[in-house]
Image 1 (cartoon, helix red, strand yellow):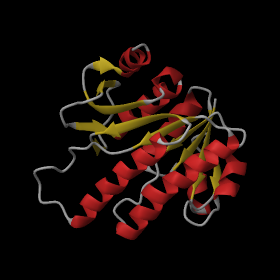
Image 2: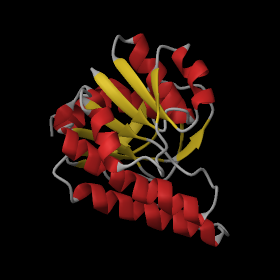
Image 3: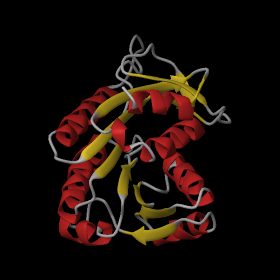
Length: 217
């Protein structure tokens, strides 16, 4: 399977690329800076340099043409409201349109857990981030793509356990980036999860089992 990873240099995207390469798939990492390529390619991830803001939709469509799926895990990473809107918001719309033009139907979006930060004194920039994430979900759902939206809890750098709690409405919790990446990899193998918005946090069920249940609903 040839999988385009938008945001491949991020902590989730790079882990996903490595997992896909290890299992024999062909991950293609879309990156913003050429100097990001060496480390990714050492993990078996072929890279394409294409700035999510500057590159036109038509060019992305050309670059996505031979792919089987797209995973959008790009984000501004707290770089300010303007970049959050441009990358997490407009960037998602651009890639979704490009995927439609290239007839790449399968599309996975890494979004945000709705309860993240609730009850805490969060800055206005965080509320803007959550607003943009919500809007990007709405924009993706409006497309004709075979989309799946994954909302992980607060991300940690702990070692993955291979076990999660995956559902439609969950109590808020944390999850390792490794387990989010592994969940995305398994979702790619189960196209019947298309049309679902799933939340994922740490848990006790194997990722493969959890996804299979959702695929067979």
